[in-house]
Each structure stands twice: as structure tokens, then as C-alpha cells.
Image (tube, rainbow, N blue to C red; front, side, top):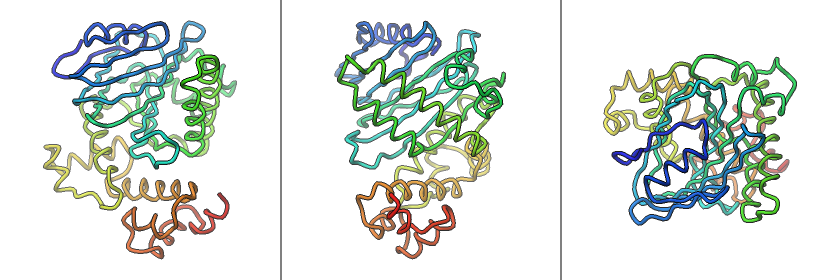
Length: 320
């Protein structure tokens, strides 16, 4: 229920979640769509489909007038996996989107997500039971299968991968076309999970945390979002500690537990990854990209870029 600008819910049945949420705030679900337009809270629109009585896929657009927190409190022991892919921005396929995130977690993991006011956000949500893995792959030796079979509470984070971003755009292009979007949601989600499986086999799903307390997880996600708001300035640890009311030792220790890297190393990796995305979009010159990301000049950017990816940005740009 809604209390102190937060809503406690269980993701086992997303339809029931939206029905309960609508009762609390005045929104309404009609078949596969949920609408909320509330002067106090803001606007929420969700398209959600159910397949084979157990697989849920949906897209939710959020623009709030005040901060709102969703608290996931699992109430069922059914084994399932949830994938959330969130973006903040204009969703016009032209703007480089900030704070893009992939979150994957199982039914045992409690967590909170804070939705900030006055920010356009869009989330793709996929929830499937473990028994549905055969729909995506028969490879029971994959790192993805190993992960989703784990009986501990776990949580995985990744920035949005280029191949995932392409599939997201395909899904978002069909949101207004009711004649095809149910099929597109399913087909592109199967492709998306396949790409995550391939990525996991190649990269070992490094950013996984087990048995993390929901309060610590929420705080570290907020810290992550804060440091990635502006790539042109490196994080100031003293300011972060003051803002979030935490000692530097605990901040570094907990952040590394969740994201597998110290804060500055994480920031630098995310920054150069964002740089590669901007290079491949091919809409800005390299010097502009370097300066927007806080590098002293193009030479500095190129040096870091080649060390990370094995090629210079100018070479990557030509191959895009």
C-alpha cells in the first residue's frame, strides 16, 4: 500500500500489483493497459502482457510530480526471474540516454527502486519462471542458467549493451500499434534474453551480488545514479558521503560489493563505455564527445579508449 510516498508490492503477478496500486492512487487497469494521471503523483502508463499463464512482459512510462519508491517484498515461494531495463531521457532515438541500466534478480531478492520527480523514465519488465528457460535456450550449461538456478537471493547490474538497445528501440517503435505489439514484445524479449545469455557466457556475469540487504542495495543504486548523472566530473567521495550520510569506508565497501569495483574505477569504466556508445551513434565529432565526457582533450580520450577496447575511437567510428 502507499505510505510515506512508497508502495509495497510483490512482483509475482504484475496484474494484481497494478490493480492494488490503482486502488491506492486512483489509477485504472483496462485489460492490458494501466493508466494513472494524478495531479499530486504524476503520470504512469503501462502496457503489460501475460503469456502462457506465467510469462509477463511490459513497458511502463513514468513522469512523476514527486519522488516515489517501490518496495519489492516477495510473498510467494515460486521461483522466477525478473529483468528490468530502465532508461531516463526523451526516448526519441536521437538523444543519448543517461542512467541506462539492466537489473536482473530472482524472486528471493528484496529491493527498492526510487523514481525521481520531473524525470521521464521508461522501463521494460520481463518476468518468467525458471521452468520457462527452455523457451529461450536448451543450453543448461550457460552462465545465465547457472545464475537463475541459484537458490540464494541475488541481483545483477549492467549498463545497457548496444545489442540490447537495438532491441529496445524495436519494442518501443510498436507501442502505439495494438495489432502487432503483443507479438513484438514476445519475440524481441526472447532475442533480448538470448543476447543476455551470450553476454553472460562471454563476460561471466561479473556484476552479481548475493544476499545483499535491500537497504544497502537501494542506497548503492542511488549512489550509482548520482555519480553517472554527469560524466564530465569525476565523483567527489566527500560530497557523496555527506549527501548519503555514510562513512567513506562503508560507502566504498558496500559499493564494491554491489558493483564489483571501487567507485572511481566503476565511474571510469562506465564513462568510456558511454563514450563508445556515443562514437558508434556517429552524431557528434570525437573532440566534442571527449570534452562532454570530461577528458582533457581528444588525445587523452583516444588513449583511454584504445586501452579499454583495443581500437582508437576514430577506427571504431569508421566501422559503425
